[in-house]
Length: 373
Image: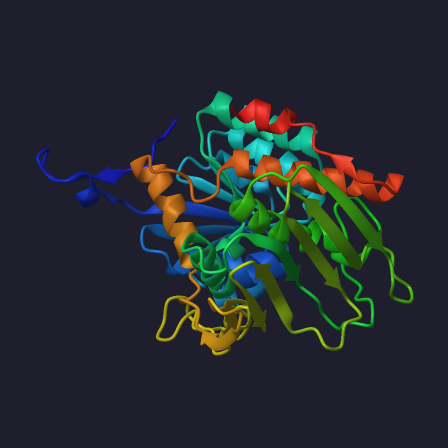
């Protein structure tokens, strides 16, 4: 089995001078996720090369990435000894089968969110990665949103004091149901599988696993076949985290509202990186990730008065994810998103589905945390 190549500095050089040679990447899928997110980020990351794209539309791939080879069959990519890393950006119900096949072929694997359809699939993928001694990660790119980086910084510095409430919204106004697999009835479709993993992962990164989950999932649009609304509470000892997304929200620019005994932070508008990628911008260029809409910080003074000020965010940086993947494979650095993190996300996603079906709050039983300890 071919190992990734590493260009080594002299023996007395610091570890940071070990530079990975180019790793060849096969991207499975060239729909929205593969075309807009993964392909441009892979192509813009030093040390990674978009070697192969598995797609049924070779002309579309060639127009965007003329140097990439196009294959119709993922098995051909798995069999290629030159491929170091496989990125799975296909419909959600194919994530686990394709990842398992790639791991069995000795490839490192990145899976677009959601990790899998359920905990059983996710656990099988992790066990397969251990057996193959390969790296397995999930594309939770919104850890590198500008607004989330700003919020994490505020919490790390204790600016808001003890946080009591976090409201995390990802709303849209899309009254017409599009004809695409994400909006059709079927395993892994709907907003809870689409946007839910992003919001859950961010909450877990900030606060760890909740004590319990209560979820309300609905089909609200005329002709809806899959979930297009969710309102989910993650209950902690004192803290309450509310995750919300809907498709019928004309005034949809609230992103975060966070309240603590030291102040509040309100953020409107989405991180700009997705729009930039959709518009064909080169990741990492001048102004990349700059959010033009600062948050609003309201701090409580010693006399109880509230002072309002703008709260700018650091630049968002989706490239950090793939740079981390490169270093994890070539230099044995920690993964930017571990499979264990993704397993915890799947535990909350699955608990949300059960909570909605049973119309009650469900405690997390801790089995996932126990498996990771």
